[in-house]
Figure: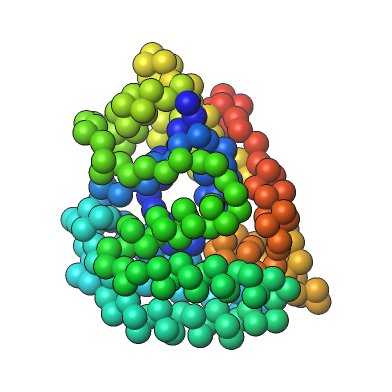
Length: 239
Protein backbone atom coordinates (compact mmCIF):
# COMPACT_ATOMS: atom_id res chain seq x y z
CA UNK A 1 0.00 0.00 0.00
CA UNK A 2 1.30 3.46 -0.93
CA UNK A 3 0.88 6.00 1.88
CA UNK A 4 1.44 9.74 2.29
CA UNK A 5 1.10 11.80 5.47
CA UNK A 6 0.69 15.58 5.49
CA UNK A 7 -0.74 18.28 7.72
CA UNK A 8 -4.24 19.32 6.57
CA UNK A 9 -4.03 22.46 4.43
CA UNK A 10 -7.02 24.58 3.38
CA UNK A 11 -7.42 24.37 -0.42
CA UNK A 12 -3.68 23.77 -0.88
CA UNK A 13 -1.64 24.18 -4.04
CA UNK A 14 -1.76 21.59 -6.82
CA UNK A 15 1.39 19.78 -5.64
CA UNK A 16 -0.54 18.66 -2.53
CA UNK A 17 -3.15 17.04 -4.78
CA UNK A 18 -0.43 15.43 -6.89
CA UNK A 19 0.68 13.72 -3.68
CA UNK A 20 -2.89 12.67 -2.88
CA UNK A 21 -3.23 11.21 -6.37
CA UNK A 22 0.08 9.34 -6.12
CA UNK A 23 -0.89 7.13 -3.15
CA UNK A 24 -3.55 4.65 -2.08
CA UNK A 25 -4.12 6.16 1.37
CA UNK A 26 -3.53 9.73 2.50
CA UNK A 27 -3.30 10.54 6.21
CA UNK A 28 -4.01 14.02 7.54
CA UNK A 29 -1.35 14.66 10.21
CA UNK A 30 -3.75 16.49 12.51
CA UNK A 31 -2.43 15.67 16.00
CA UNK A 32 0.94 17.41 15.76
CA UNK A 33 1.75 20.97 16.81
CA UNK A 34 0.20 23.80 14.88
CA UNK A 35 2.73 25.86 12.92
CA UNK A 36 2.12 29.60 12.75
CA UNK A 37 2.53 31.22 9.35
CA UNK A 38 2.27 27.81 7.70
CA UNK A 39 -0.26 26.73 5.10
CA UNK A 40 -2.88 25.16 7.35
CA UNK A 41 -5.21 28.17 7.33
CA UNK A 42 -3.88 30.34 4.52
CA UNK A 43 -2.91 30.42 0.86
CA UNK A 44 -3.00 32.71 -2.18
CA UNK A 45 -5.59 33.56 -4.81
CA UNK A 46 -5.15 35.51 -8.04
CA UNK A 47 -6.09 39.20 -8.01
CA UNK A 48 -5.05 41.70 -10.67
CA UNK A 49 -2.55 39.13 -11.90
CA UNK A 50 -0.76 38.99 -8.55
CA UNK A 51 -0.91 36.58 -5.59
CA UNK A 52 -3.44 37.76 -3.03
CA UNK A 53 -3.05 36.16 0.44
CA UNK A 54 -6.05 34.95 2.40
CA UNK A 55 -6.15 33.70 5.98
CA UNK A 56 -8.82 31.91 8.01
CA UNK A 57 -9.03 33.63 11.44
CA UNK A 58 -8.29 31.33 14.37
CA UNK A 59 -8.95 31.52 18.10
CA UNK A 60 -6.04 31.66 20.56
CA UNK A 61 -3.67 30.09 18.08
CA UNK A 62 -0.47 28.72 19.55
CA UNK A 63 2.32 26.43 18.45
CA UNK A 64 1.80 24.64 21.77
CA UNK A 65 -1.59 23.44 20.54
CA UNK A 66 -2.17 20.46 18.29
CA UNK A 67 -3.71 21.19 14.91
CA UNK A 68 -6.94 19.40 15.83
CA UNK A 69 -7.26 21.57 18.95
CA UNK A 70 -7.24 24.89 17.08
CA UNK A 71 -10.66 26.50 16.56
CA UNK A 72 -11.81 28.85 13.83
CA UNK A 73 -12.88 32.37 14.78
CA UNK A 74 -16.09 33.91 13.39
CA UNK A 75 -16.51 31.28 10.69
CA UNK A 76 -19.87 32.50 9.24
CA UNK A 77 -18.56 36.07 8.88
CA UNK A 78 -15.26 34.96 7.37
CA UNK A 79 -17.04 32.59 4.99
CA UNK A 80 -19.29 35.37 3.70
CA UNK A 81 -16.31 37.63 3.03
CA UNK A 82 -14.29 34.84 1.42
CA UNK A 83 -17.10 33.90 -0.97
CA UNK A 84 -17.36 37.55 -2.02
CA UNK A 85 -13.62 37.55 -2.66
CA UNK A 86 -13.92 34.44 -4.84
CA UNK A 87 -16.69 36.07 -6.88
CA UNK A 88 -14.75 39.32 -7.28
CA UNK A 89 -11.49 37.63 -8.26
CA UNK A 90 -12.80 34.88 -10.53
CA UNK A 91 -16.24 35.76 -11.91
CA UNK A 92 -14.78 35.95 -15.42
CA UNK A 93 -12.83 32.68 -15.19
CA UNK A 94 -13.82 30.11 -17.78
CA UNK A 95 -14.85 27.44 -15.24
CA UNK A 96 -16.15 29.81 -12.57
CA UNK A 97 -19.66 28.33 -12.37
CA UNK A 98 -18.61 24.73 -11.73
CA UNK A 99 -15.77 25.66 -9.38
CA UNK A 100 -17.80 28.21 -7.44
CA UNK A 101 -20.66 25.76 -6.94
CA UNK A 102 -18.23 23.20 -5.50
CA UNK A 103 -16.46 25.70 -3.25
CA UNK A 104 -19.68 27.23 -1.99
CA UNK A 105 -21.03 23.77 -1.18
CA UNK A 106 -17.88 22.82 0.75
CA UNK A 107 -17.90 26.02 2.77
CA UNK A 108 -21.60 25.56 3.65
CA UNK A 109 -21.34 21.83 4.32
CA UNK A 110 -21.46 22.65 8.04
CA UNK A 111 -20.55 25.36 10.52
CA UNK A 112 -16.94 24.27 10.98
CA UNK A 113 -15.37 24.72 14.41
CA UNK A 114 -11.92 23.10 14.09
CA UNK A 115 -9.46 24.14 11.40
CA UNK A 116 -8.25 20.58 10.79
CA UNK A 117 -11.74 19.44 9.78
CA UNK A 118 -12.33 22.36 7.42
CA UNK A 119 -8.90 21.97 5.84
CA UNK A 120 -9.28 18.21 5.47
CA UNK A 121 -12.73 18.54 3.94
CA UNK A 122 -11.42 21.03 1.39
CA UNK A 123 -8.97 18.36 0.22
CA UNK A 124 -11.40 15.45 0.40
CA UNK A 125 -14.21 17.19 -1.49
CA UNK A 126 -11.96 18.50 -4.25
CA UNK A 127 -10.47 15.00 -4.61
CA UNK A 128 -13.98 13.54 -4.91
CA UNK A 129 -14.89 16.20 -7.49
CA UNK A 130 -11.86 15.14 -9.55
CA UNK A 131 -12.72 11.45 -9.20
CA UNK A 132 -9.57 10.48 -7.26
CA UNK A 133 -9.77 7.05 -5.60
CA UNK A 134 -7.46 7.80 -2.68
CA UNK A 135 -8.69 6.84 0.80
CA UNK A 136 -8.38 9.43 3.58
CA UNK A 137 -7.57 8.94 7.25
CA UNK A 138 -6.54 11.06 10.25
CA UNK A 139 -3.38 10.46 12.29
CA UNK A 140 -5.42 11.10 15.46
CA UNK A 141 -7.24 7.82 14.76
CA UNK A 142 -4.00 5.81 15.11
CA UNK A 143 -2.27 4.75 18.33
CA UNK A 144 1.19 5.43 16.94
CA UNK A 145 4.33 6.40 18.81
CA UNK A 146 7.48 8.31 17.97
CA UNK A 147 10.01 10.72 19.43
CA UNK A 148 10.38 12.73 16.21
CA UNK A 149 8.60 13.33 12.92
CA UNK A 150 10.28 10.45 11.10
CA UNK A 151 9.48 7.96 13.88
CA UNK A 152 5.86 9.10 13.93
CA UNK A 153 5.56 8.68 10.16
CA UNK A 154 7.04 5.19 10.33
CA UNK A 155 4.68 4.34 13.20
CA UNK A 156 1.64 5.39 11.16
CA UNK A 157 2.88 3.59 8.03
CA UNK A 158 3.55 0.40 10.00
CA UNK A 159 0.04 0.40 11.47
CA UNK A 160 -1.32 0.77 7.92
CA UNK A 161 0.88 -2.03 6.53
CA UNK A 162 2.37 0.44 4.08
CA UNK A 163 4.82 -0.80 1.48
CA UNK A 164 5.93 2.72 0.55
CA UNK A 165 5.84 6.25 1.91
CA UNK A 166 5.90 9.31 -0.38
CA UNK A 167 6.71 12.86 0.70
CA UNK A 168 7.15 16.15 -1.20
CA UNK A 169 10.76 16.51 -2.28
CA UNK A 170 11.37 19.60 -0.13
CA UNK A 171 11.21 17.31 2.92
CA UNK A 172 13.91 14.93 1.71
CA UNK A 173 16.42 16.10 4.32
CA UNK A 174 14.08 15.02 7.12
CA UNK A 175 14.12 11.32 6.28
CA UNK A 176 16.69 8.53 6.32
CA UNK A 177 16.08 6.06 3.51
CA UNK A 178 17.91 3.23 5.26
CA UNK A 179 15.71 3.45 8.36
CA UNK A 180 12.60 3.10 6.21
CA UNK A 181 14.11 0.16 4.34
CA UNK A 182 14.91 -1.63 7.60
CA UNK A 183 11.21 -1.72 8.49
CA UNK A 184 10.16 -2.79 4.99
CA UNK A 185 8.97 0.58 3.68
CA UNK A 186 10.23 2.11 0.44
CA UNK A 187 10.80 5.87 0.65
CA UNK A 188 9.96 8.13 -2.28
CA UNK A 189 9.71 11.84 -2.97
CA UNK A 190 7.33 13.67 -5.28
CA UNK A 191 8.82 16.34 -7.54
CA UNK A 192 6.37 18.60 -9.37
CA UNK A 193 7.17 19.50 -12.95
CA UNK A 194 6.57 22.92 -14.47
CA UNK A 195 2.81 23.55 -14.34
CA UNK A 196 1.15 26.28 -16.34
CA UNK A 197 -2.36 26.93 -17.60
CA UNK A 198 -4.27 29.83 -19.08
CA UNK A 199 -5.25 32.21 -16.28
CA UNK A 200 -5.70 35.48 -18.12
CA UNK A 201 -4.60 35.36 -21.74
CA UNK A 202 -2.81 38.71 -21.81
CA UNK A 203 -0.93 38.37 -18.52
CA UNK A 204 2.08 36.45 -17.26
CA UNK A 205 1.26 33.18 -15.49
CA UNK A 206 1.30 33.26 -11.67
CA UNK A 207 2.30 29.80 -10.34
CA UNK A 208 1.59 27.76 -7.20
CA UNK A 209 -1.59 29.44 -6.04
CA UNK A 210 -4.37 27.63 -4.17
CA UNK A 211 -6.08 24.75 -5.99
CA UNK A 212 -9.01 27.18 -6.20
CA UNK A 213 -7.17 29.01 -8.98
CA UNK A 214 -6.55 25.76 -10.85
CA UNK A 215 -10.24 24.80 -10.65
CA UNK A 216 -11.38 28.21 -11.88
CA UNK A 217 -9.34 27.99 -15.09
CA UNK A 218 -9.39 24.24 -15.85
CA UNK A 219 -11.94 21.50 -16.45
CA UNK A 220 -11.81 18.26 -14.42
CA UNK A 221 -9.99 16.55 -17.28
CA UNK A 222 -7.45 19.35 -17.52
CA UNK A 223 -6.81 19.30 -13.77
CA UNK A 224 -6.28 15.53 -13.87
CA UNK A 225 -3.72 15.99 -16.65
CA UNK A 226 -1.89 18.57 -14.51
CA UNK A 227 -1.81 16.14 -11.58
CA UNK A 228 0.27 13.79 -13.71
CA UNK A 229 2.96 16.40 -14.29
CA UNK A 230 5.21 15.08 -11.55
CA UNK A 231 7.97 12.54 -10.94
CA UNK A 232 8.40 10.05 -8.11
CA UNK A 233 12.06 9.76 -7.09
CA UNK A 234 14.22 8.11 -4.48
CA UNK A 235 16.38 10.24 -2.20
CA UNK A 236 19.47 9.17 -4.13
CA UNK A 237 17.94 10.43 -7.36
CA UNK A 238 17.36 13.84 -5.81
CA UNK A 239 20.96 14.20 -4.64
